[in-house]
Image (tube, rainbow, N blue to C red; front, side, top):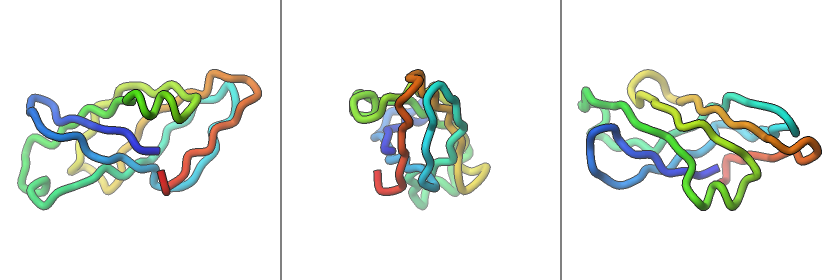
Amino acid sequence: MEIPIFQVGKIGKARRVVVAENMTVPGHAEAVVSVYIERFEADDDDAEADYVVEPNQLFKERYPLQMATTLVNLNEAPTCKVRVLNPYPLLPCMLTTDG
């Protein structure tokens, strides 16, 4: 899974987001997914490390999932959590670390 994120209150480029481990979201199920967010050296010194993670059009076209917009802090843990929902009853969805 690859989605862009944007830093709160700052204009800048999007960052890559990748699931931390392969997982399947069954039909009619909700899951909290651990993700790695692309980091830069300057992030360690940035006191403002809050980012908004939200799906882009490519994510919506590639996966039959709904994803909640999520506020995360890059400096709190190695991974961040996002919530996804599979609204289809008979269509499991595989999320893989290779995007």
